[in-house]
Image (cartoon, rainbow, N blue to C red; front, side, top):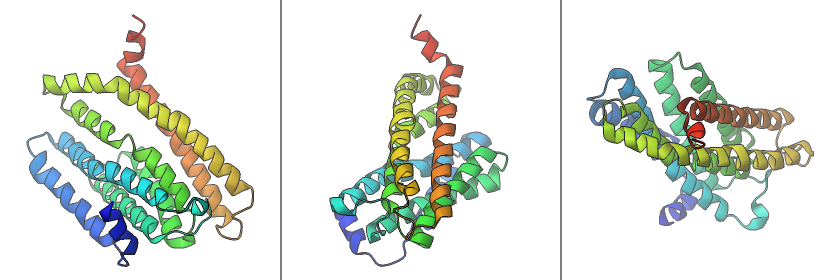
Length: 248
């Protein structure tokens, strides 16, 4: 909480600092932490590492930035507060670093690259173009990253499961709760909030604050992301057959 309080009064532009931090973490992952791993596994491990340093801190920071606002200021069209801008910059730096990772080393992962580009479009337009609507995006950020810690531990265990029986056991143990939590957040909470957000932005209440093309693009990008996320998790769940094993 002391850190959030200090960020509330911090006037410096923190994006370069955040980006340098993620770059340093990425290099540590590539050159030290995952160096013994095979090349593709090392790439995935380094990406997971920076995601670990983004997900939970971003969730807590987003929650703190939301709670720091008076109830009356928690509006889909409210001007961005300074703390909200810093949280947005923290996430912009992460997605920029991970996007560079994929563009340089894994340019064939078109779906992830498209996800990162669209996410950056939403974050950047909110932060630097319209300078309003951060409340909505911080709630979506919180919902999107609340599963991050479990997700990344599950992914790292999955990457390493062929070489380590312990990792395979961790992967198997984490799969059902991860699938359930991810589905609850992305399949229930996310769509419900998107419905509320869509209703507001299509009502015309923000027409003089946020341009129509920004509002529509936010709705379409978030909606598409939710659909793709749910298709992804259910495809993995079915392919791993754990759902069917529950009935045996």
